[in-house]
Length: 419
Image (cartoon, rainbow, N blue to C red; front, side):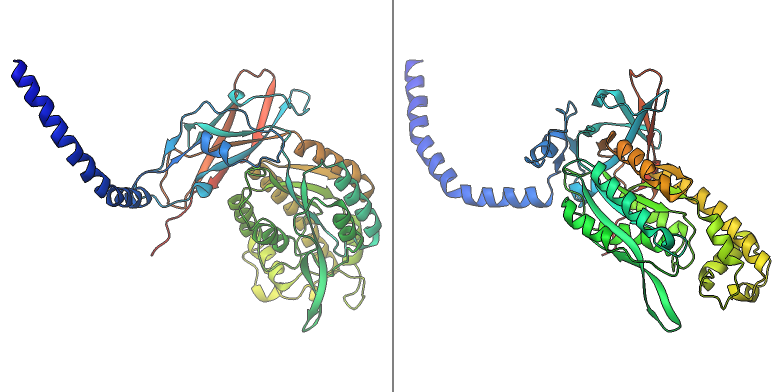
């Protein structure tokens, strides 16, 4: 037995150096192959720890520690982490309608197409916001442009340090048959109040209201870049408008889809301009003060309200009678109110009404308070299918009495691009 142990020890002392040399020379190859396999095949881990590590260290502390375990992205799934995370802005109000601002992550439950999801990101009401401030400076509001400037400046002053704003308005550009209303992005997103106030001071006016085009521009330009972790799930458009589109090349369905895909909450301050508009509609078409609708928006009206009418009867607004124009205007105002209400509900925003522009400042203060008490919920969907389909979202409260929650109603899943 003793001889046997000696032979084993001798064998170990002879073999081990040879194994060490073999491993030493083989290590670079193994490492290279391992790295390549990791980059190409290994499932990536995403979740709370990774998001916490990527947060902006200069931001105010907004996220609580995440109890959820990381989630594996399936092998071969090439989607980036940024496009996988679904963010859900949420507002919680008590039974009197006042926002509640002291809730924690465990007070929220999120469902996608009826299936519970694991929250990995949670931003409290102290986190900053990014806002596109859309100011309707079309013909129906041009006589009170000073009031619009005052209301906009009051809104800018009411926001918190760290909030970033982009100012968007309407102006005129030269067309073949005269001035044509256009969308003007006066500033990119910035937290510099002096820059914002200078933009407000330079507001112009337009001969039409390209409202839908402006909403598309917000999604395409203002919020084109993906949000940083600091602003993820905390983006909104705040529009002061009557909502009646007279000259866009796009329509409501396009605007709604754009904002939904961008994850932007829509807040509207609806200003009543019907008396002003009706007065202008009764003017002769040769009068400089009259108002009109573009051929595209007239055709949209025909399809929605009188689809059996002849198309040629709805090509020139000026050839219509005064009372026919007034009837179109009233129906468009009702349509605008419904559309803004629908868009606000779908995106988790809200409508605020102002009977006049004199009341706009008070409405802006309400919007600022609402935005300042918004939570941001984030999760990686359990369904990783890249089919481009719309998925419904539902948010519920846990352990909170006599309260209600408002959030976006869904999002569009990413779609696998064809190579």
